Length: 351
Image (cartoon, rainbow, N blue to C red; front, top):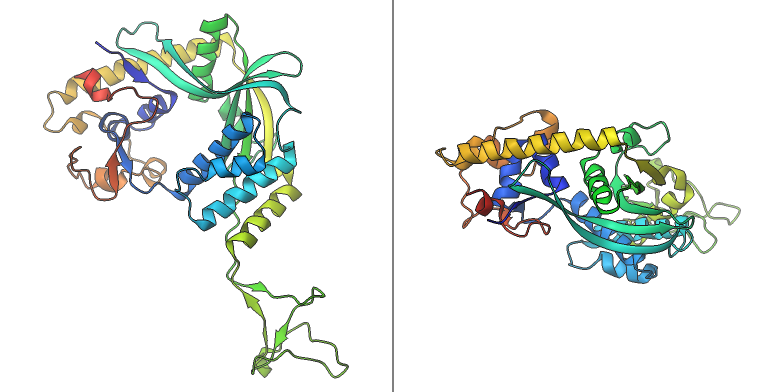
């Protein structure tokens, strides 16, 4: 019998909310139109993958647009993010590592389990200029990237990092190091109105008839008097202007938006992760056994209802309203598709 594949994301999902795990990893329910944050994150990741292959900014941006899931505003934001990243680190990364092997897949046994195996994909295996071999992982986040931010403390116990460390240790006998290459997502939104400027860079003030206001000395007015029906000439920001503004803002504060830090794993951390992972495997087997006896299989996977979980869960509407889900006829707004890392449906292996 084929083994059930446990990825870092599916393990994290099971720990966050078993019911969400059932929808996502067993049924394979996915949003037909993923959120903007997810689409932008995927696009930036694709651009980073192209960069790791030594391609220039134009090719990175083209790779980010692959799949056609971005509208013009999202594409503009990605343009600004990737452009600022290149300004921060150079158009290619030969300044930071000597070699990069991008998108490396791995499979790892799970001690104590005859049913599960760990599978995943690292963004890259890099050789640094000092000769050290490291896992290179790209992340996007909304968190503060300052040295004092708890983001870095939490990252040490990220399931993905620990799964990588387990694989590296089994492969090489060394604990290894992960370099986290993190981008803080800009919160800038398109502007409804941008002042128009003349050829000298001066604002344009219009009167009630739409004519430019000129002072008695023959120079143009710079401020509008609304009592006289005057207004500042302007226009809604275009996608090109929006992308350029994001590029400029992120480039002006690189320490705020970009960080690269090494995170190491200790033997104690790895041992703790292995115990936790085996516990998740046993928990999932218990739920699967209960599902075979349940009126509806998802009833065997308990909800973990709390504001943080439910607000960010794409299945909240289906779950909280107890709507039945048929894999052959998914609810409106959803489709059935398993994660790329999953070779077969989990349900098939558990049955």
